[in-house]
Image (cartoon, rainbow, N blue to C red; front, side, top):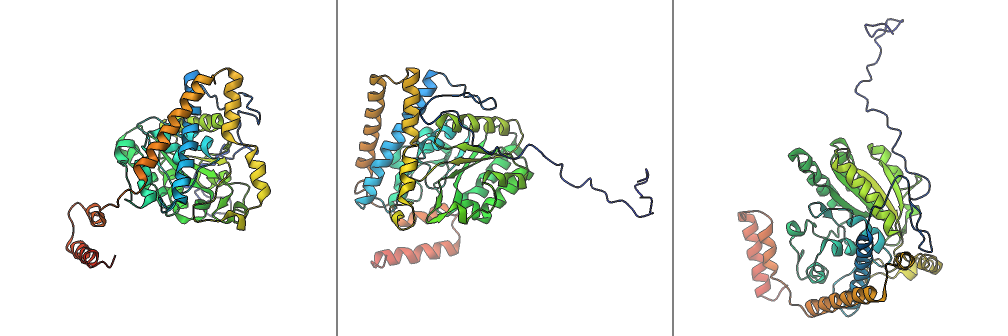
Length: 381
């Protein structure tokens, strides 16, 4: 090609300057990142150092125990008809606690409906959180105070919102990072594609954290994915993909810490796929025995993230009887507080829903509100 951009044949050569630069550092490793072995022994990872002191290591355990204890109480409340629906996080404590612990209080969390461990790390009162599950109100906590968005039942619809907030933060020069949680089933939704594409093009400070727990209700991952892994999808957006052992709390923390620092430096999103397993039913209204092989529970039960981490702490001499007892008593007290706050809690005012659509209610919204008010008065709803 000549200096004028014309080839030897006299035909103008294509100008490929509009093409995106080619990246070669986006593919995940074949093996998931892990730091703890099955028995709780630690091996340092060269790319993802943990960097926690003894207090931090104990704090991870505390949050995991609290998460599991409160989860067990919520399951009981659901079976007693005190919650309309509940989605357990049993077996996923390491993925949620480890990743959320890598954030600062200024960072935002956008959950789906199973991120109870992330909520515990962020300090949400379980009573406030689970009024959503009881149907008392759509969101019982203040999202701005906790920087924890409302739980989302509709699959993946919160991801464009999370990407939008991250884009806004970048435009405003705010160094906060957004954490967006979702499950493997959400990767089959268009909202996920839109959020990742927007975030990558805008270099938004967001971490997309997928908890691949094996099942989207009754649909296995194998029926949703033809590629090597969910993490491999990141390359299509120009986003690094990382696979991590989702039952290893230290690996989840270290990998997320790396991704958060990367986002805060202005280097854009990361897609993390945490490989874990849903030990309970999808929700209280699901019967997993109709589709899930019983042998899977035996295999994954042997990979219990809490037992693995407890063994690690014992090996380090960080799990004395006094500390363990203190944590368990705190967790039991929180579970008792949840029962006291939720059991037979009265419903909220249904008309309040009209107060949170527009700053000033429109005439059409006033008309709809009046219709509902009359139906309530007449006992129709």
